[in-house]
Length: 393
Image (cartoon, rainbow, N blue to C red; front, side, top):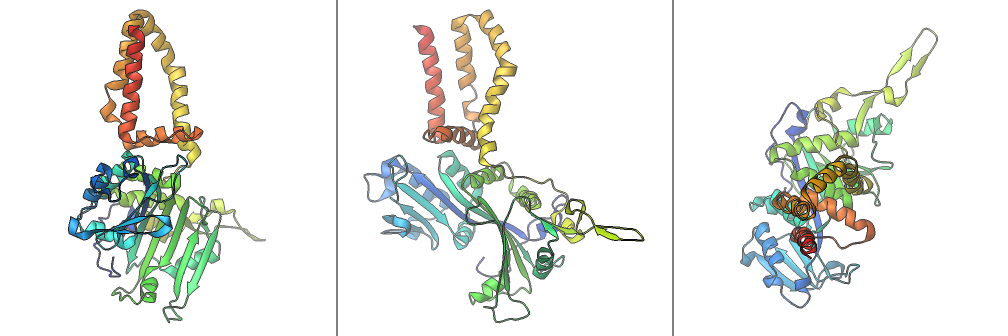
């Protein structure tokens, strides 16, 4: 954003309330990948994955530079534009293969967008090729916002008038680095370094001033959700299901599931007043207006994702097995196996990045190597061919 409050507001809808008055944007991305074909080359220009990735990032050759050395033990660093980095030939994974790293900071994300980059194309490419997306941040900037300010949020949190069903730890950090006693920089963090999800709410204007970056707005609050490891992948799959216009609603849904600000409710009679259990408190009006009429969306944990295949196997056994018995007895062995072959191969092109993620999550249970999209197709085709070979014996 370059520190300027001039990014256009996202379209407002009734469902998502006035959260839409701010921008919803991806502000950090980190993905680790393995490229066996890079093991014996110094410069990766001949690697198809690398060439496609560079093409998606959208820069011409004169804006790309590869140098020796890099952070975290990587041997080469490719800088694309000014801020996008791909670090090559780094630490080895459990299979003894060198890993490579794409890192896009906030400034790199803005460069990508300014250069015409398409997040949907990039994220789908990374997922389809079996990349391990270890972190993604998505942020909502509220600029010159009237419903509430950062102090309203702090007061609610300090009085314990809020709920965060997804987080057990909170930290409030106040800084006077901006030389303003009446408006110090404030950061509220839910979650810890070990969490797969973190919510941070902070005074973005104060942060920019602390960096000596001039801003023209009077107020700038940022809500930022950071997802790591499995939850990063699950969030991206949710992102890829939606159009660009639906992303603010997605953010509102996961934010509504992450935190709510409340108004205490009391029960009174002539003798006493009692504060009711927090579960009976109402959501405060300004937070309701901010979030809007959206359904809460939980970014599910690893166990739920891994159970998907087991659930589908159970469905096959309970709902489909008897049908297969009848068909096999009617068709006979040869025609029945030909049918199974058609079932396996007819809809191969319909397999999506979500299907790939489900397969890889189940394979990870016994440390089986993850598949790329092309490997997934090849695996199914191989199984199909083996069926036909078996019946022809």
